[in-house]
Length: 491
Image 1 (cartoon, rainbow, N blue to C red):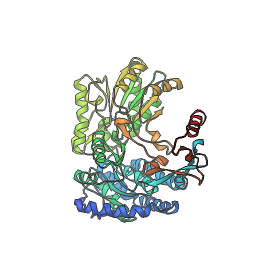
Image 2 (image 1 turned 135 degrees about the vertical axis):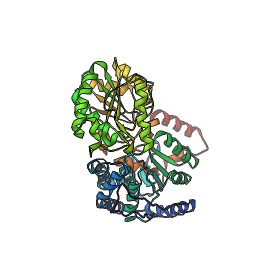
Image 3 (image 1 turned 90 degrees about the vertical axis):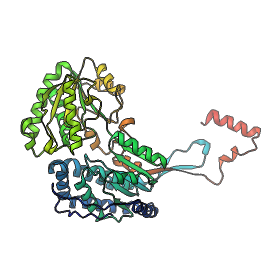
C-alpha cells in the first residue's frame, strides 16, 4: 500500500493532506506485482475470501470515527448521514458477500442440447485479474469500498483511485487499507487527475468507474485501447413523476428526502419533478413543511443545521448556483429557498417552479439541492419529456394505481425505477444497480457485483464416445441425412 503522512486520529477541516507522488515506473511496478499476485488469488477458495472480507469489515468499523471526521472535513457531512449513507451500506455489501460467496463461486451446471448427447456443460466463475476502481467524490467512502468488496469476493487484485476532491476521505481509505492488505493485492493511489490518467494507460483486466458521463466517455476510450472490459456507473437526470391520484404529502416527504440527502449530490437523486399543474401548490406546501421538519429551521437559517452538508468545492458551487440565475432569467420562480453563500459553498434547499425546458437546469445533471418543477397536461406529455432526454439512472413514479406505474414503465427506459419512493432500489442487494447508455454500462451490488468482477467461463466436457463424430468428413449421404433429421427434430 502507499504510505500517507496524515494521522488517522486528527482529521479536521484544517488538516494538510500530504500524499505520495507516483511516477509511471511506480505504477508499472505495482501493476506487475499485482499480475503475479492475481495468479495466486485465482486459486483461493471461499474460506480465504471470507477471511479477507471479514478483515475489511473489521477495519471499516475500527476506523468509523475517523471516516466520519474525514467526511465532515471534506464537505461538512454529519456523522449521522455518514453512518446512514457510507458506513451502513458498505457493511451491508460486505456482509452479503460473506453470506453468499460460497454459493456464488460454485460452478453452475446448465442444460446440454440433444445434439451433444452425453456431454455436460457448466459455467465457471473466474477472477478477471487486476482491476482498477476509480471512485467519485459524492459518496467517496462507500463508492470506493463497496466495489472493492465485490472485487475481493471475486478473487481479484485491485488498484484503487479515490477522488482528489475529498482528500481527507481518500487518505483515510489509504491508511485503513494499508493496515490489512499488501500493495500487490490492494493498492491505493491518491492524487489528482494526472494519477488517474497514468493509471488508465495500464492494460487492466477490468475497470470499474463511478462518476460523470463526460469522464465516463474518457475512461471508456482509454479502456478501448487495451480492449479492457469496463463497468461505468454514471448519472443523468432522474425524473420523478407525480400522477393525479398520488398521495401528495407522502410524495413530497420522500422526494424532499431523496433530493436534499447529501445536499443533492447523489447520482440517483430526484433530479426534476413532473407534476400536473393543479397539484403544484399542494406539493410545494408539503415540501416546505417537510424540509423544515428535516432541518429544524427556515431556509435562511439552514446554514446552522448540522444535518445539511455543503457543495463539495467552489467549482461545483458556482455551477449549481448558476442554474438558479439562469432558470429565473428564463421565467422560473423561486418557490422556496434560493439562498447561497460562497464562503462555505452553501446552497439552501431550493424549489423552482415554472421552469422552462430550455433552462440549463433541465439540460445538465444538477447534483445539488435544487428541485425544478415542470408541469404536464397528460401522462403522455410527461413521458415525452423523459424520452426526449438520455436514458436516466433512475425513474420515480408516485401513484396509487398499478396500471399507471405499468403504463409509465412500459413507455420509458432507465437504469432502475422505484414506485412511490426514491433511491431505495439500491438498498436491495438482489437487484442489479446500474445505468443504461448515457447513465452507465453494467451493474453491481450483491451477486451482480461478484459477476461484474468475474469472467463467466464456458466449460463443455464430452464423453469418450462422442456423437460429434457424425459431423466429421467425408460428408456422406448418411451424414447429410442425420443433419437433416437433427435440424428437423432436435434443434
